[in-house]
Image (tube, protein in one colour):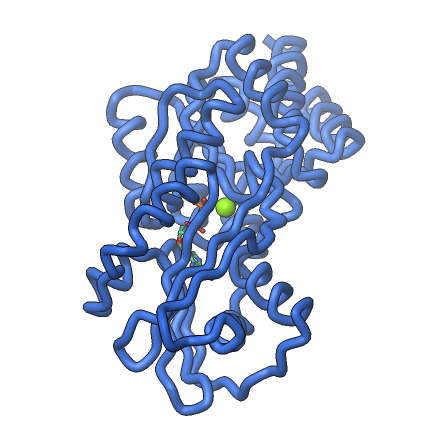
Length: 294
Ligand code: ADP
Ligand code: MG
């Protein structure tokens, strides 16, 4: 290869807001045929807002939100930030919190005012904490999820106390970017830790037909490996701690510049703006740059 052309390619990349780890990355970028995309914070803005709160009888929504917000204080996940912001916006007092622990792809736990509070996926509370969702709340959860929202269950001391729904919106550039990937010959795949209802609602908006939902960080890694075993050359695009292992395993890892440090550290390319059109720019740039060499 001609080092000068590669350096020109990487230099042009930084003008486009594409940070490329090294010239060798251009070759990986040129050969990808499959692009796996995280949902929250990658296809969507990741700027989540609370859209609904429902507490069980005998519990106030104020207590539910205050406890959930305290448990989420230590979380850098958009869901955690949305719940904390909602509590602040309501003017609720802060509660003392200790022993925070995040569970990427599932939820959080912390000791709030002496109570062990768990906030996360309803299925995770049921399977890992033996706190099932009461049957009378299921219709409300299903309705919110099929409208594209994400519903968190809230429990403390082993009891179910209510649900908090959050939602975010698809980035204005995402549908166009995905159409560009298809035009460049790539097969787009949506991969998310979120529920199937929300995953399909987003997939419909950006015209992706292949969807993998409720995927843990391990499942995300396993999907990348299985695509590679099937002979695909895989780009993975993500922003979260939950994406880091998949980003590192992919033939090309791409982080959103708006994402977490661990996603950026695991990736070959960072798109500063966080717009997926930057990934299409990177692929075109690599093809053009290496085209001048061969
Ligand atoms: P995505 O793959 O779409 O970026 P994540 O893997 O980060 O989603 O999260 C998957 C699911 O885990 C979320 O939809 C949510 O149900 C739950 N979850 C993750 N982080 C948190 C958190 N801080 N608080 C509550 N629930 C969370
Ligand atoms: Mg994400």
